Length: 113
Image (cartoon, rainbow, N blue to C red):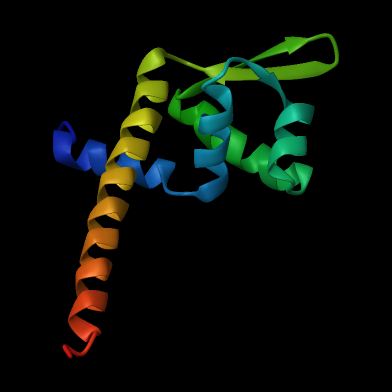
């Protein structure tokens, strides 16, 4: 029996649900990167990065290619970069709304003279 679309989407978002994986995807938006550059940017243990890259690779969201002794990762398609941009826009709107609410709350705290 096929997996319902909503369940597949939930599994997809669960796969994305790790800060290191999100950071990798953000970094790869600018183009392919060797593992050593990802390590320098993310500053985690190589084994931890390797584990997270393996999750992304198995999901098909990134691809890897060996260039000599270097492994280079890149996004499997442009839709992932668009998803990261959309997430940034959504978060920006959410935070703007929270800031507006915070400003209203602060105004309400000021005693009227």
